[in-house]
Length: 394
Image (tube, rainbow, N blue to C red; front, side):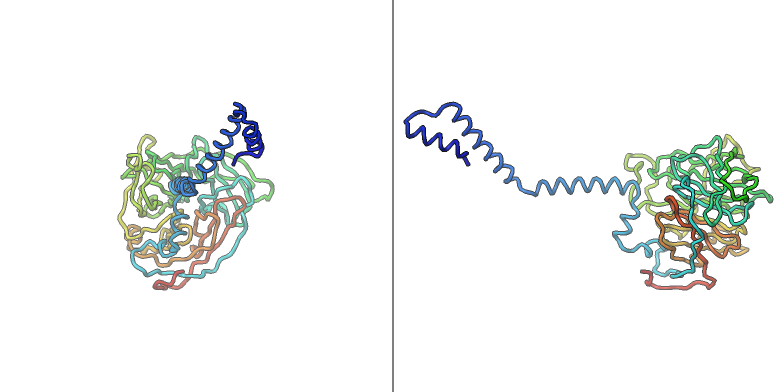
């Protein structure tokens, strides 16, 4: 529409039989051009904008999925428990409502990502824990009630992606092994395990402010996976066979390295590995190769594991479930892990639960989660044998 001032000037010009001035013609053309642009923009409609919005949203979801696909993938299916079972059949040896207890909270703000825990062999009712990737290379000694007792910096060590910690008992000596084994993008050439003698904390029970000390690794174990880069967050040590055990954390899709043409693990199923090691076998300049074992056990999103000090019981966890295995006297762990778990326990809700450890008797498991001030939970393991429930996990 031509502005009213333009129309009045035109009318006056016509009445006076006078030609339009250049200024009048310019203002009229600008007004018409403005109207045409508005019409052109309106003619485009919302469809291209919708396509652009969908493309941007899809790109963002792809980035999130490559970083950590499990919450998106499993929430969208609505079958977390069923898919987390790890077995191709529909039978789950499941205890639905185990007895659980909150022992306390990790009070120290320095513990922001409790990614792994193990029971202390030296200090009763205490745990060792550590933070996740990019943190200071240090361990925290805490009571099971959550109170921080000591911080131990590990010298000559780096925290690329610390995901697991386990107690190593050899010849009546107690060691702590920390697994720098995480690899979300599946790009690492090798991994490391730092082994230290369990630190002696003087006056650890005095109840005053936490002690600070340091420790030097007894050994730094360098090793690689047989098929190339693998993401792994679960590690435990079997004192009877003197072996480290691992369960990989599969991704429901290709790894970043495989997308870029590398040799990353492209299988969306978990695998078990073992690595024979004891202090008398260690060589500083050696790069070990873990051995992969084919088992039927293949849950999604495995985040932690532990083997009891007796060497007769193991637990593997993911974000929702704990799988308990028992090894008969005459069986090896390879054989035990090839069988179905004796129990599958649905775990309580946690912010991002990754850590698990047996208590001293082996009748309960202890859990922590990433995040500041998270709970220390105790879940009693059911005493009954297999309780088979077909298609009843909701």
